[in-house]
Length: 127
Image (cartoon, rainbow, N blue to C red):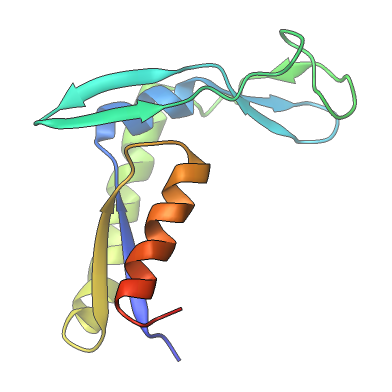
């Protein structure tokens, strides 16, 4: 049973920048991000940390080399976003009147984001 749908809201320019800055270990697949963002967009402050490796270009887990995926480029990411919006639209429309939707701007890193979301869910007696 689905009780709630959480919509994570991030401006396209931030999504694109963070995807372009993603690095992946060619050996074990561990994921890193080399871009820190501190930017205000439409009155909302976004402070998203980088998640760099301890040694530039090397995986923390296995020491393998880090690569940038060939499809982590702005045009491909824009196309992915268009496809996502097109494919998710009927699902959102189906559930919109049936269950609770919570819109959440992703303005901070994962640790703070999870805490914020848990507080929202608790305030609605969903956790």
